[in-house]
Image 1 (tube, rainbow, N blue to C red):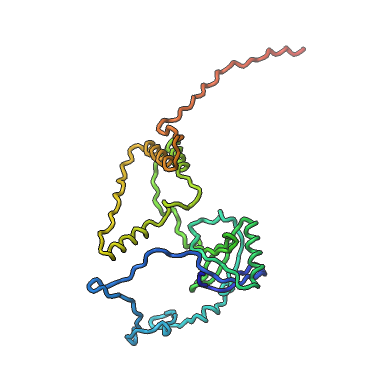
Image 2 (tube, helix red, strand yellow):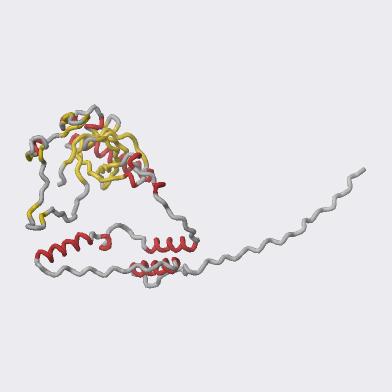
Amino acid sequence: MPRTVWSGAISFGLVTVPIHVQSAIENHSVQFHQYHLEDMGRVRVRKVCELEDREVAQSEIGKGYEYAKDQVVPVTDEDLRSLPLPTAKAIEIAGFVPLDTIDPIRIGEGYYLAPDGQVAAKPYKLLVRALGRSSKVAVAKYAWSGRERLGLIRVRDDVLVLHAMRWPDEVRDPGAVDTPNADLSDDEIDGALALIDGMTRDGLEGDDLRDTYTDALAKVIEAKRDEQPLPEAPEPEKPGKVLDLMAALQESVAKAQASRGETEADIHQLSKKKTTAKKQPAKKTAKKTAARKPRPA
């Protein structure tokens, strides 16, 4: 069972939901330590007091803020828990928005929110059902790790999930990226759309989306441990120069469809330009003008 990283409550109007916050992700990457190459002795980072020039234990270490040269104000964990903020002890819901109105670049790591005891069961389930029926997500504020944060609460399999979010001023303007200018034809865009269709999949499962880096690293470590030759790395395909974009798109579509097991590929001749019959201009017809009858005198 994941360990609790924070305990508090969700504030939803006048409704309070006591919760435990648990990490929703796991890190399966290979972890390395630092070693002295001469004798393979472990290299460690030791915490030393500059004034006493000695290593100090974790129990002797606390937080502090340096407001002037050599002038430090100690700040304890109890001080942080007693901040004059409503979000210091609760995740405060500020409103609800459709999920597609939030730029994904602002969404960060996720945490499961577990109900804290039987007293939280009914309001927890109430928020789960209400969010599910509304098709919206909650935007909330909370204070963790020395700062107030913005969060997003959504439902995943009847469990509330809190995603950390970046404040608007933490996201850089994409206008800083120098995008190239290039002329594209409609045929080239249609070719790219055909390639997207050929590479469209039902979900994010599959061997091609597996972490092959960790697997390869494990094989290298095992070979070195057993003093065996290192596994040979596959020869990477050398990317060719794209001289004909249409030909590259057509070949890519063919490969994508072949990988899906389609025997009769419905490949459009992307290299052939679509010809549309030009409409002949309508012949001008002389307007018939009816002879006006003379007005009676």
